[in-house]
Every structure is written in structure tokens, then in C-alpha cells.
Image (tube, rainbow, N blue to C red; front, side, top):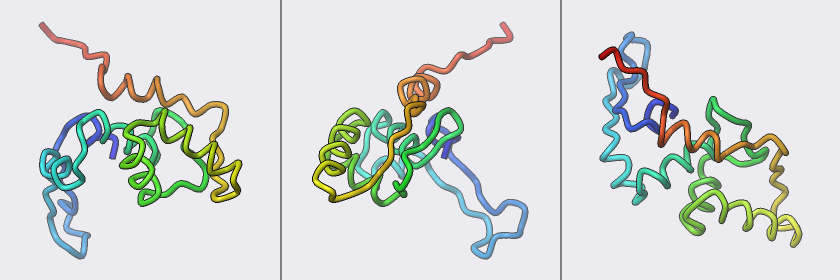
Length: 116
């Protein structure tokens, strides 16, 4: 997911080991299908787990998508989780080192080194 969060398309199964064969995943099509902006998609990728921060324990991709669709960003998702946890509807654990702002910045404003 990290590659797609940076806005790239993805090719899977190129090594011939996948049951489905070679699969091309078009980034723009993913955004349109999920009805998400790039910023919302980055937040979804962070919620699903990325290399730049910890994840929310107990949150899978379907829960992440549901929460994000309803709340539009991670800040809203966190508020919703806190409310749901208080009401005992869910028991999702947000660790103190869930540094989603830094992860978001790395995806949306990466430090690019130019050879020029």
C-alpha cells in the first residue's frame, strides 16, 4: 500500500507465482472506485498499516474504510474510536506512538532528492 499511497500504479504477480497472473492496479481507478480523494486514500493506507508509523490495534482494512468514509480523516476516526471505546462498542487501541501526521507528511510531501 505504501507505493500506492505515494500515487503510483502497481503491478502484482509479475514473478509468475500469483494465482491470478499479472495484475495491474491503477491508482486513479482505485481512488474512483473507493470514492476517496488522494488525501483520504493516504489516511486509509496509514490506518491499514504503513512503514512510517504503528497501526491501530484491532483495525483491519474494512473497519478502516468504514471509519474513514464516515469521518473523512484520521483525526475524525480517532475521535470516533475514542467515543466507541467509551461506549464499549469497540476496543481499538491507539498507541502513543501512532505518529500519523508524520506518516501523512511523508506520503503527501515526500523529501525528493533531485539529480539536477
